Amino acid sequence: MKTSKLNLAFSRYTDDSQETKAESILQGLTGNANFPSPVPSLTELQTGITNYSTALVAAATKDRVKVAEKTSTVVSWKPYLPNWACM
Image 1: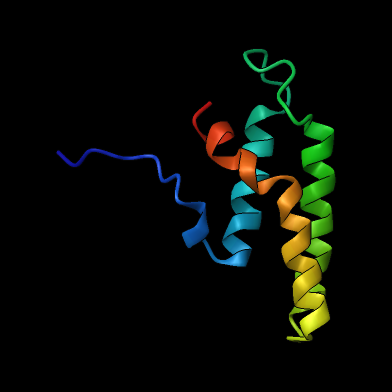
Image 2: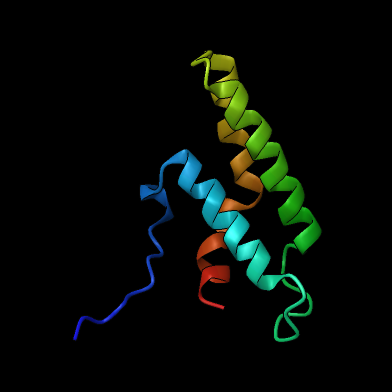
C-alpha cells in the first residue's frame, strides 16, 4: 500500500497552487477549536491571500513591477504555510 506524505516544499508550487494551498489551509483553520489563535492571525492570512490574489492577476501581464509586487505580497504569509500545513 502506498503511504501518503505531506508535501512541505511550497517553493515547488506554482503561483496559482500556492494561492489554492493557502486558501485550503485558511479554510481548515477557520473555526477549528484545536487552533484557537494561530500566528499570524487568520485575519492577517486572509488579508495576505487577498493581496496576493490581486497581485497575481496584475502580474499576469509580465510587467516587472507587477511581478515584483506579487512576490513581495507573499512574504507576509508564505513562511507560515509549512507550520500550518502540519496542523
